[in-house]
Image (tube, rainbow, N blue to C red; front, side, top):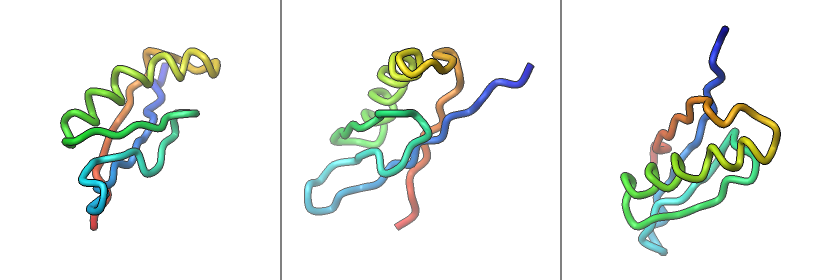
Length: 69
């Protein structure tokens, strides 16, 4: 059985001084944080619930990667 990997692209908002979800395979995922590590923590906390609410496997892997500027 293959485990699906949901990809999340993080970007830095220079004007707002925060990291945010720029693009995501996780339906409804929209969050931000002051640091990249804090954003990853938020995404990994929120994603399982969003996946379950949308009928996807809440135990799937979620990969967060920063966009290159």
